[in-house]
Length: 289
Image (cartoon, rainbow, N blue to C red; front, top):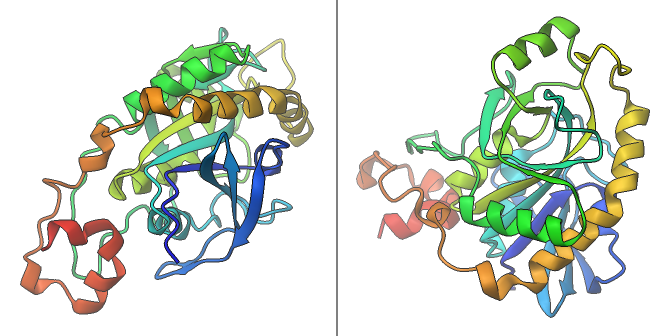
């Protein structure tokens, strides 16, 4: 069955439990990279078909390292997705990015250690250039949608992804601040890079839940603190997503991310193993005709 769903939202239960969502159905997908985190939730919002993916599985059963990022992005690609909004919790590494604020980052620093970060391999090589890992066009539209929802939004900033599941030590947090990082989280890498390889425009709505552990006058981050702020921000997240989808006609179209592999593939066509070529056909086949 062909779905042709262009917009996907990746996040937690507070994101996909939207009252406005109608014609809801679930879809279980298995990919060459395994199964997605959970059943994909399909629905309609403002007459636009959308898909929601619970990143950590419903009930939050997967650690950041255990999330099957490749399967998730591949599954969305096979549905026809062209735009991904990631809704993510983050810690602030800047005084002016306060808990409760929302950041739309424009740069990404990968500090993870144990994750499969590419679809390529097994005889098929591609060298993506992710100089701008977040879609500028989609990020701009998302920032406008958050502003219209009444959120306090910061446009730009560097998002560092750590391995987790533990939070940072104070020494690590201080170092990340000295490096010029703006916010910190555990899931944006390799998700953003895989979306780029799949030629899907990707933007993040990062909800600041805490000041990590560097702030002298604030308590160190805890799970309770993160959950409390996310619950408080759920209404803003819902309204922002609703605004973005309702205004799709004003921002949707061809974006830079949609041609990211045009000059990235290097393996000779006749040297790519058939099984590898078949597995990656939703991503690379248009360049191998």
